[in-house]
Each structure stands twice: as structure tokens, then as C-alpha cells.
Picture 1 (cartoon, rainbow, N blue to C red):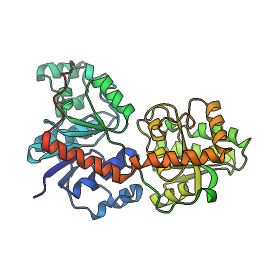
Picture 2: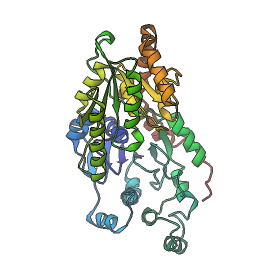
Picture 3: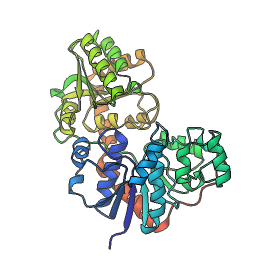
Picture 4: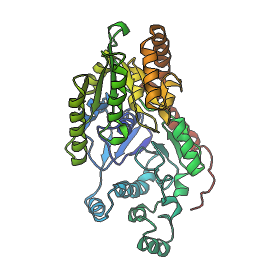
Length: 403
């Protein structure tokens, strides 16, 4: 009989890299365990598969969504962060966890599921805030109620009775050595790096047939610095005039992202036809665009991991990344591919583009390292961690954290 596993992920859909990790976790674990997925919204399997190259429509698992009472509770808590969704579901996950052999949390917050569980942390948001220095949700009710009235504790934390100490007893997985360092710095607890799964390219094109173009991938948010990409490649084009930039991003109906998308289109129009914007590409279309171009460009500073440059590397591109965060691990910190300023980036791009032997060297190095980010590598590592947890439990107790 298969072991029973509860997978906790408060949101589950197409979109950013975090959702992609959840999709691959569900696909991998449902093939080996009796999985129940707990999420706030019913997954749109076809859209998820189209976005991440998974095959969830063929997987067997059960869905556990919020009750009407829980939805009403969420709407009653004024909090634009949506963390109340996490905590409402976390409360029920804690109640149900005893029915399962193991619980796996893959969501936006560090998770307290009542007993030791496995959690995949994309970034330690809770530790990077004032919440851990305030009265925790696990405090006695009189103290907690007073803290809420004084604004010292967010209301959503009282819903799940969140405990940082219980969270720290989990087996923690994370997406990069950089994020692991942040987790240790903020919580004084260990974590193991399991690189996220990046899609590959099924139909690679030879380097000689690829265009002298750059591909950029990212959500509609200012931190992705698409405007800077246009600026830097305009500078590069003064020396290599056939260079083009392809910006690939999702576009939805939300007012905030719509305004950014309109601004991006206007910026591309002003720059000229060498800048092309592609919205809502399917996985197959994105892979095709990556396969046709030689280079990738990633501009976010202190990215936790960087699914986009990982996808570029797996598609055979040479990615250039900012010299910060977890994205430098994708290119093994190679100084020829990590830039720190506009001038530095332009110089390094031109150096690579002007040297065929250097291109061959970097392509070989990047492609070999990119196997660490394949879905197959992720699945092997994930199953190994779950089996070890089922056999041995979390890797020893952690030190108590003082609130």
C-alpha cells in the first residue's frame, strides 16, 4: 500500500517559478504516493501543463479545497498580502496531518503544520520581516489578543496559531545556496538545496543556425528591469547592429500588470523593431524561441534562484546574469557571465559575442552544469528526501528560536 502524503500549496496554477516547483512536486509525488493536494483554488491542469511542461492531467491524486466558512473567514480579514489564505489552510492542514504519513509544504510562507513536515522554501519571507520579533500566533490567548489589538501581531497569524519553533523543526529544502544562507542567517536552521526543475528544449538548433539575439523571461514587475535590458542592448547594438531582444512575459487582466504591459509595449515601439515583446507564450513556443537565439539576459538583482536563466541554460543559450543572488549558481559564478553594472554587462556581452572559441567554451560549461536543473534531477532529489524523511524523520532537532 502506498504511503499517504498531504501536499500543502495555498495557490496552484500557471505563472512564476514557484508554481512550477509545486507542479513538478505534485507530478513526481503522485506517481509514488497516495497524494492529497490542499490548495485554495482548484488547479487548472491544462493551463499548468501548458505553462510548465508537466502532465498533471494524467496524474492520480485528490483535491482538498477551502470550506465556505474558511472562505468567509479569509474575506473577513483585511490583509492585502493574501497570507490569510495560507493560514486558514494551514490550520486545517495541521488538523488533518495525523491522517498522513508525511506532509509536504510548498507554498509562499514558511510552514507550521503542527508536527515535523517537509517544506520547500523559495525565500524566507517570514524571517525577513518583523513578524518573528512580535508576539507569535502560538502565544497564550490573552497575550495574543492584546498583541493583535495593539497591532503587534497580524490577525492572520492568530488563525493558524503559527509557531516559529514548530516551523524550524521541519526538514527544509530550498532553491539555491544563496537562499539557504539567508535561511540560516534569519532562522539559524539548516536547509538542503534542491534546485528547481527548469524546462528543457526537445528540438535543439545548432549554434551556427541560431540568431544573434537575446531572450528575456519574467513576470510583469519592475524588479525584472526590462527597461534596463533595452538600454544595455541598445548600447551593445552600436557595435553589433544585428542584435535583437525578445521579452517574454505573462499578461493577465489585472490593472497593475496591464499598466506595466502597456508600458513595455510602448517602450518596445519607441526602441524599434529590434525589441519584440511576446505575451503568454506556451511552453512549446517559448522553448522554440530560446532554441532559435544564442543568448539569454536576466536582470533582476538578488533573485532567489532564477528559473528564467536556468531555462535559458537548458535550452542551449548562454545566459548573462546580475552578479548577485542565487542566479549566479546557474552559471557557476563565471565572471565572464556575471555583470555588476551597465558598462560591465556591455563589455562582457561584446567580449563573448566577438569570440567564437569563447562561445564554444561557455556553451559547453553551461550546458553540462544545466543538468542539475532538469526535471529528472529534481524528481530524483525530491524522492530521496521524502524517503529519507519517512525513514529517519527530520535531520535532528534545531535550536530554539527566541521570539
